[in-house]
Length: 200
Length: 200
DNA sequence: AGTTATCCGTGAACAACGTTCATGGAGTAA
DNA sequence: TTACTCCATGAACGTTGTTCACGGATAACT
Image 1 (cartoon, helix red, strand yellow):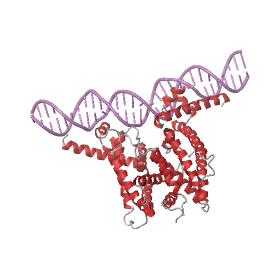
Image 2 (cartoon, helix red, strand yellow):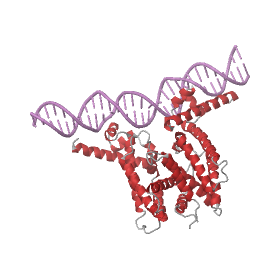
Image 3 (spheres, each protein chain N blue to C red):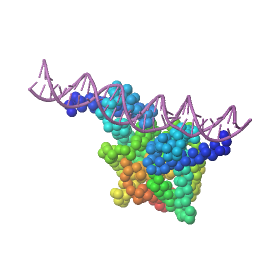
Image 4 (tube, rainbow over the protein chains, first blue to last red):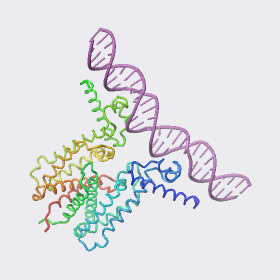
């Protein structure tokens, strides 16, 4: 493949991803249609499949960007706050996660709503981004539980992330909870303030 | 409508729901197709829409049954264990929830994968079943926090359920965690054992 | 019992979807 | 300039959920 063709292909991939991202933001994952994308970026329907295997792969690319954004905002929530206690830092990160999910609900939902049954192995960037996120959580936890084994600490990291994720997930799902954003923050704070307390 | 017609309609609704349930169990929510259901229950495609508004409504009926089953197994996990401590009871209920989700993954997933954007108001049985589930959780919590205001207690109930749900959700999602079932139980236990501990 | 009216099961039809493929034109190499 | 390669094209295919005119079956009434 000539460099010229490579460039065109990359540009089309970029335009398609951007169009898909805007579409997800505006109307959700399910509203992403091949013909609409082709019309918006000015290419034919078939051209999409020369760049991406299928629409799932395209959404996966969008999800990659979203994951990076989450990593940015979660990491940013700690800047200037490294002196604070571990519980407080966990709360700061969780609230950053909540803020992103609340402000970019459709984008954030697409991360988990994407069909994963037909896909092959998990992309490496997916696991890498997740590992980075987990590392942020593991650090305050290791201060709270200095004697904990690495394996056990890793499990608690996953568990805590899953817990916060669950609170955000069901909290934003007005079908189930219908609580406001303040309430979601309260739930997260209530939970995280308990972590690491010793038995009296 | 004559009673005869009512009976036929109810029987068809039942057969359709059973067929949809089996289909979800075997191949997941997305594999439920109108023509397949019609063939399985021996009716025409159009007949489905005389009984249910659309396929979403049919799946909602299945979800109602699923919710009842969850309520049964969670409640059953407490029988004979009312003498145990509140933390232990929370763990028992959570493990019952985990067991159901692990043994009926497709059925359990359908509860949350169903599109909720197009649906109207939440069915009353949905809220009722959820309230029953929450009441089970609130009782041990009220023992752990006897001085807590009802509103705050309700929030903590939702938060804890959401946390356990999140752990089960991501724990069963091999794409993200890929941990085994023992690890999920450990995460739940780790989390719930911390609830209610006083600062030393 | 016979006649009329109402209902509802039927399956072809419709619109929209993701994905594919023969074709032809644009771009590249000789 | 010529010949060859590649890929953008959009019509076409197979499925999907949902609808609707039709006609037979059932109910209501005399």
